[in-house]
Amino acid sequence: MILLIAMAEKRAAWVITWDWFGDNRKPRKLLLQILQPRWKITRVLEHMKFLYLNSELFLLSERFRFLSEKAWRGLIHQEGRRIIIGDNPILVGSLVHDLRVEAVSTGQQIVRWTQPAGLRFQLAANKLETLGQPTERALRISTSGHVSELHEKV
Image 1 (cartoon, one colour):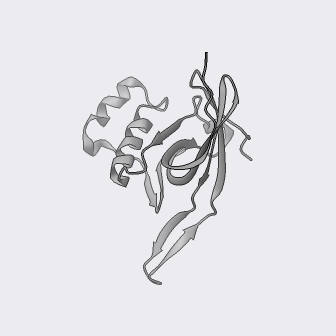
Image 2 (cartoon, helix red, strand yellow):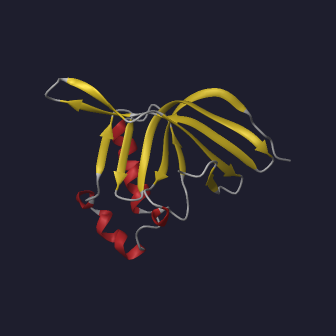
């Protein structure tokens, strides 16, 4: 017997997913990682680096050079409550406050959240600048752990 949990309440969490530019760069295996909202941004960043380095993007033999902490040469953008690492595809980590889960069938759930806009400090103006708009996200998760997009990217 499988117990279905409908979590209508909104929860805070770090949410980590893949994003990409162009269908030819879409990862074969999508990802959804949910971390405690109390984690400091440095801990989330280290976790994201290892997810990226242990992804399908690198052969096992290529990962040995990453055993040194100094080995990370990838891009890192920290934009307020959003962290982006990698090139294309990228891992996006967001501190969200409206994570919710909906049970749609015995074997599937839908996870929804609002990915926050990024932030950048404008030194000349001495103020924060918003990058982009908050985006509603939704992924379908099966009990086998398969992650798929609820709506195809446009």
